[in-house]
Image (cartoon, rainbow over the protein chains, first blue to last red):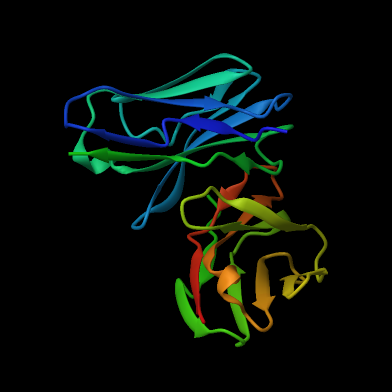
Length: 114
Length: 111
């Protein structure tokens, strides 16, 4: 079975550009999470969806970040405009039930903003 | 807001040595999970503990949940280079709040 799929795996962009990260959760999972990981701050939850509805977006840094889940099999995380401090590895994870359930992580997208 | 503190943050040991890493909080957890993240990959679940005092073994890895369900430890016997990675604990508190991750212990096992 395919796990969580993320694209692209690597993204290098210039400051001010729009960046879109994509995620396909495991089929049948009802919850989806976006995380950001850096050496300094560790793994930070950005937003959590349940049944395609955003439940907790308190971790979204600022208005430059937005996330959507138009259907059960696809989600995007958009940064516009991007800044160098957004450089990090962004993970998408899904779980069968809810936010207390085991999470299955994708391979991540390594974003570098120059 | 619960806070999970992991220690040590970094650990570098030789192959064959034993080690223990810790996950501590002032909150009581209904369950606690341990994940391992290898370089270039996402975290992968190793084990879930739910009962105070519970001990689970996974080959050379031994996981223990504290009696009061506020802390947990991971002991690795005869570490191997393949154990290298970031070990993350994550807990769900008694209020049923969402899974929260600790800062992780970064382990390097040198051959």
